[in-house]
Length: 183
Image 1 (cartoon, rainbow, N blue to C red):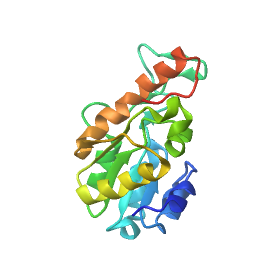
Image 2 (tube, one colour; image 1 turned 60 degrees about the horizontal axis):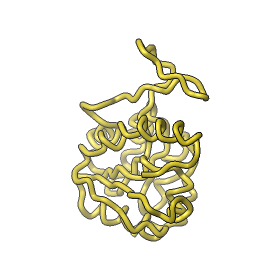
Image 3 (cartoon, helix red, strand yellow; image 1 turned 180 degrees about the vertical axis):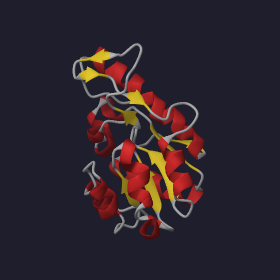
Image 4 (cartoon, rainbow, N blue to C red; image 1 turned 90 degrees about the vertical axis):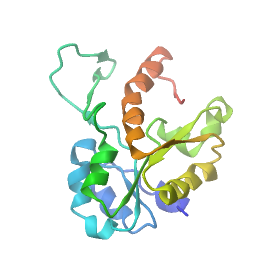
């Protein structure tokens, strides 16, 4: 079972996070999408046999785009990879001895740990992995926070949809005046 205390301590978005998380029962990657595969590959031996939760959105910041999407904080970053691959799948291919699970990526951080704080908890947490035992372990964490609607999307290929949802999530947030948004 994934311990809440080991997860909540992992909040930074640096490669150090991946190294720190290895000491937990389950590792959590919170590195930037650009450095994620490199960071976790560097410590592959320490991650072997563990479940790794990938909740990163694979954004490419500063990319040249023909039709950029302006936002209050600048131009919306470009998802990379998009549609034909996912960051979670790339991590899984790079770390075949690790059980990669994609989850938490479609929620604001505050909502992850307090689902009832927005609309009384009326939203869905998604989870995908090629490893059924790892999905069960990861599903225990949001359930311990009070999530009642946790949808198993199936194999890790479903991470593509979760990662691509990030732009829709942003559009909803902008339409609602950047209020906390959750599915």
